[in-house]
Length: 302
Image (cartoon, rainbow, N blue to C red; front, side, top):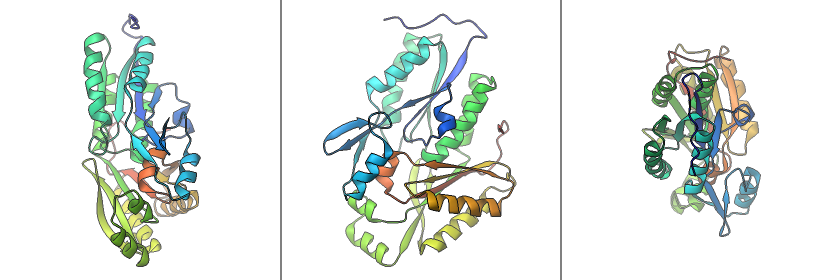
């Protein structure tokens, strides 16, 4: 079926696509220039589309029963359905996918994008490896959506996203190591020792991979360390929006938000709830903070 519309210069509009590893809020969900592709979550051998056929609270209830969900990448039907919709509406397309080193989604999507570039030569396509996700991806997506709304050229938006990926910093920690143990990502002995000694992992994302920056004893100490690193990390770019993401722990997220505003009164903050896919891996009680370490040339304020 031919779905492509003839487009005239001046009629073009960019559509941004993300997947459900990127955090979302109401502003993003209500933005007509955003499309979201669901990953899959499996509970008790039943597989669901994240955010469409299953909601976050259901996944957390499952985890509270000491059971670990399974996740898998986007499907062919999900991505082609989204691409076809964008093309039929006359949009050029940017898909900012989850880190290629943490999922096969980017690699899978790249094959489909090459096929679509051949089929629809008058449509611009750009597939970008976000090298992350969660609140870091959300910060970049929000900036890109503002640029789309304000009529920035396709390549300017692409350039901004790629630049931002190298300048958005990820700091996060987990309240409880048991979820890493249950998921087979940490051995039981290390998990037991860590929990007994109240050891908390200070995690960062570097070149698309989650890495342990430091192990710190005590929840208050690790929050203090991370907050101090955020204050130093923003440098002179103090009037930016800083994102805080949480995995079913809004109380701690709001506490972190208050502390950030005390340290950096010029900043704005935004709180996200980590999506079900990443929550399945990180466990209940994770907290992340995300910010730019340098001001982009085309930074978009409200």
